[in-house]
Length: 77
Length: 247
Image 1 (cartoon, rainbow over the protein chains, first blue to last red):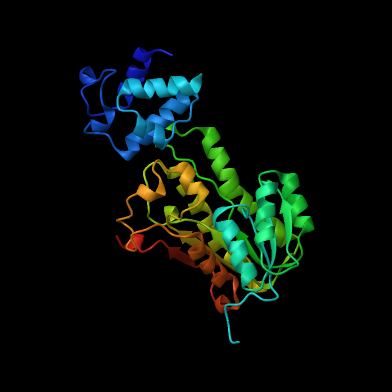
Image 2: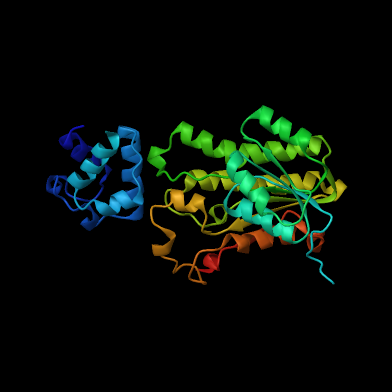
């Protein structure tokens, strides 16, 4: 699992945010386009790409994209 | 005591009886005097439901209704019924671009194919008595409550709403009635497991009653549809959603 790849996969889910502004330290809950549908889309993408089921609690715990990446990595291990 | 809502001397089959609305429906119907036949996949939890039923003469049949031989065994085992509650269901939340065939198959097999085939099989074996009542547990997801990410569940529940209407037309000569019930968000393990937020912290502002439903509040409506109080009611849809459809 590569953080860089994950950030790219995350960016592909976004429709309005400026991709150049998105990095490992982006606090994704604070994105203007963050919504319940985007949250569901993140869960679905992680399931499809990593075969990992993340829950509401995991999304809440993660502040940044890197936090989320680490949670997925931990679950994958 | 005068009570047109009682279920005394009625034999009722409930699917999905190991948890949630199914379990509560089985328990409440037993309290109203019915003899219950409960079925579900999980034997341990199904036994807990059986043990929680009031009165005696109830039975349980462990069955996976997506498995044709289990369904056949169930239909062969059950006595003649006065009521059938097709409750078993699951939910998977997926945004449209991420829907996979396996998600669709899993949900539709349990939520749609199983209740349709079970109802058909029971009718074929003539195990529904004259004046029997069939209740399809659908959802507000088929009645205009289009929650984001809930399309698979919604389409599976829309299908059984429509099926209930067709079926009602076909069984009218035997005075069997078929109705569907459409709950809003009810606090059960199913909704806890699929939703992205806990029911305690969810926003219920669209519910006029400002909270989610309790399984009993759906069970009592199902019991009403099973009782002789609804002998003249068929092909109807009963919405119970704390008033959310008004919002």
